[in-house]
Image (cartoon, rainbow, N blue to C red; front, side, top):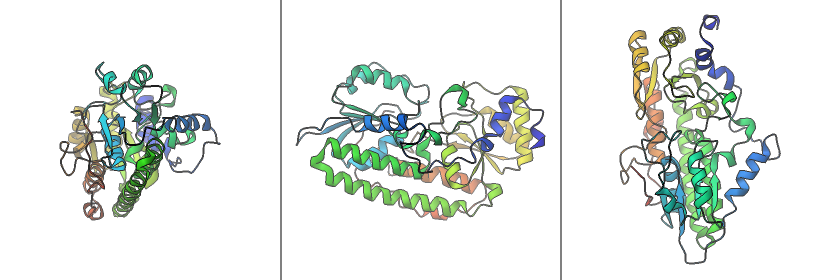
Length: 358
């Protein structure tokens, strides 16, 4: 890419994200015995460390971001009390739990977090408030080998924080479901059959989502499967489904790009011939709007990665509804046919009685 020669290192990191991650597969199959296995293995052991509750009792579960809450609710099937911690529409990277969350944690049997250094303040609060019998299960850290961590513009390796957005990749969400099932079965064996059945039914739904994304993505030529977004939430998805990440506007320090950097990004968008750029419903971006205007490229500002659609109780207020919406939005904006995604049945497999803070 010779046209990148004179741009700033910061922007070069943005537009060369795919060059850094293109060879990385988030589903390579490495296990805990490989490099970085101590981190993954320790996280898995912690997930399964919670004590079994007495027969006839109800599991008290805490969750962090709303997509994880939705996934857990489908596996639990109304047999557990589930309380979300991170309010929807909140920046989960900077969220600081209020002291009142401690009251939830003291009665929690297991907390399901994403991990990969996403929820450190919540982990710190949990460390001093969770009962000794409870488990703190960092799903992403437990299922993803360290070799498969993705570092990029918003999450540079020098900063020590990998991209944590595993849940936007259905292939990795399936691994979350399997681990959640195992944790619930271990802690509440009286309901093991129900948890196992719910997880199997939900995995079928996720496999259908996976197939629909593959089908819909194939309606786009490879050169059109390009993403320039505000929030850097789709790196693992891109690696698994053959998409190219051009970059993300939001850098790791959450500052705005300089005027020069914006100019360089405008040049990059023109040269890449990308058909649409994508903003966040949660993080409106004047920069992306400017880039859209100056390049004549469609600017779509409705993507969301951890804020579910609608309100709790709405039919589309679910992880499946969120994934369907995001990938229909991307594929259609880029000129593809998202019929396979539109035809999905996104109904939850079990009642979602979780508490979602708003």
